[in-house]
Length: 281
Ligand SMILES: C[S@@+](CC[C@H](N)C(=O)[O-])C[C@H]1O[C@@H](n2cnc3c(N)ncnc32)[C@H](O)[C@@H]1O
Image 1 (cartoon, protein in one colour):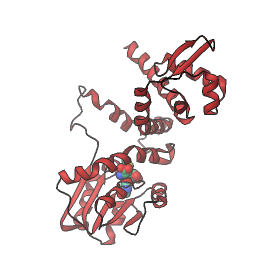
Image 2 (image 1 turned 90 degrees about the horizontal axis):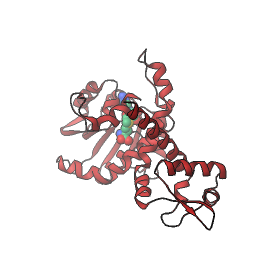
Image 3 (image 1 turned 45 degrees about the vertical axis):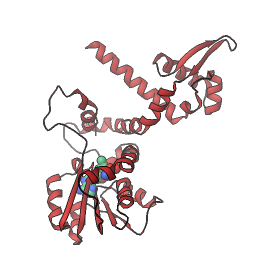
Image 4 (image 1 turned 120 degrees about the vertical axis):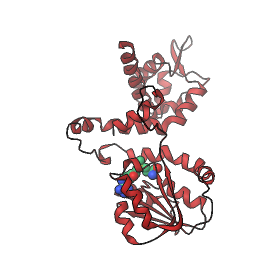
């Protein structure tokens, strides 16, 4: 058990060092084949040399960078493998999201006895990082997932509840070219950001409202979406009940949520990350 805890500490420290590298563009200047000294790395990334030196040494010890002693320079030079670089690129949105979640841990601790909520404002950039994490998935996979569920006919009106910064709303409007897509979210910051997106058009309407408030507007929709949001609603069952009044007679509801087993089982170790993130926010 002590080993597992020590490994977790090392993982946490490696994670934080990676954040420093991402925020300071350090990985951008470290190459696969040409070893660079810490002075070269610091200069190219516009960083303090002493900080850069410690960072390179730490990540070489943490097996993210490779360090080779260079006889010409009389010091270590650093490289990164192509595989590490592409893994970092692919995982950056997720790393940033986890980092955002971490910023609210002190508030989660404070509210643990009362069960009071911790609001999004407490998490540094969490909505943006979440949107960056999920956005590429909507752009690549949403069309196919909806098709497999038999949702591919043309529609006039689509509703995207809990739309956040609107990545799913924009994806829906690209899939259903003749539809008007309404994105609804109670978070003002997210809706403000969605409205600034250059993909906004006449066919996309954003509403900063609670879902139950929007439901009183009396409009009807052929498709109502809840994408990765129902678990965040204070009353998810009531939110689904609202759809009775909002759906056309042959309308459909599409719900997307993170995969998880119905019941907790300590054997489902692959669920650790999602359950841990959920506990911490
Ligand atoms: C995890 S985010 C998902 C955002 C978006 N669907 C996406 O995939 O990027 C969940 C969103 O649900 C919104 N939300 C929670 N309760 C809501 C409610 N009652 N009415 C409208 N939006 C709500 C939150 O503000 C948040 O933006």
